[in-house]
Image (cartoon, rainbow, N blue to C red; front, side, top):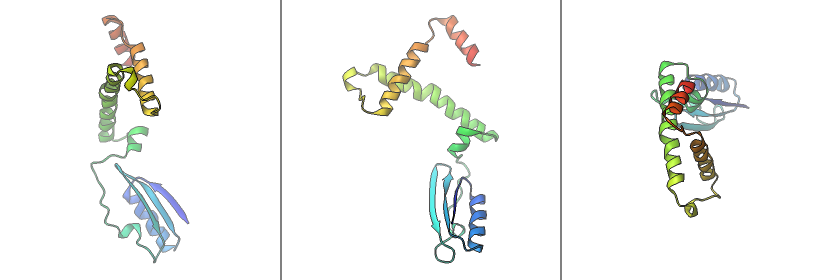
Length: 142
């Protein structure tokens, strides 16, 4: 039996064709943009991957590409948008949520909320003390 975990249709079709012609069962899995896929293929008994009508979403970029190594121009733009959104939207929203909340409303049993609290404390400790410090941090970041 062959098992794969691929993130593009061309590679899946290649492996599918080879396993079907060799009459070897295939456990096909992987991602395609934001979608996940798992299929068990038994040659000449079940539908093969090549027989599916799963269209490739050419506009979606796999998360593994964004998180590991964006090499194409579009991937780099998406990577930068993701980083910008994380730095200037998600983190400040979590910070505001923690510091605007009443201590009694925080759920310390929820691991995500505990992580958000820890991140908010780190942000508060790293906050610039004055304009010169802000310029210094920006220069270091650049």
